[in-house]
Length: 190
Image (cartoon, rainbow, N blue to C red):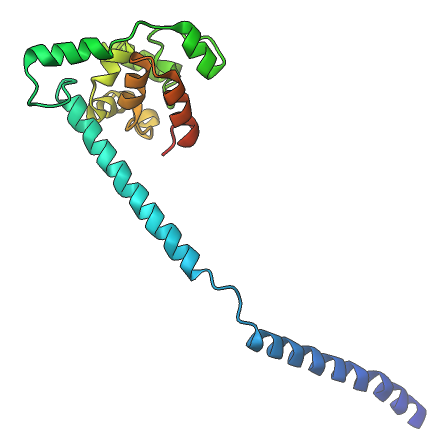
């Protein structure tokens, strides 16, 4: 019987010592480790995020002001200078430049080039009388949302905040800028 008790203790003592050492090692390691302090980086990213949000809000306000004013950039402009400004920004459609920037053929006034607009939404805008990039660029964000709301629940989830701005880039032939903007903004998803 002594042999059996001795055999159990020969296994039990090293096992208990191992468990105790493991627990002590964990506690000592956990207590002495300071961990990574990312608070400075986190605060920096929060500041950057709030700055970007304020920039976005400012851009959206400017966009709303431009589109709600019928496309007139400043109310201080006279009718003749507003017409001259519109004529100055009007650029003839250059399919080669568009194809170069996007790597595919672009048809004039194809609303589907705008990120977030697919065939069904394009059709909804056509039915509402908005058939050109110019017309979309002069439509307010609220007006775009009304058209989407008219399509039912399925279309209410889309965010048209950048659509008039993107349409204006198309209308003015700023293909490289549009491609860059879409790429930088996760393809229209702000």
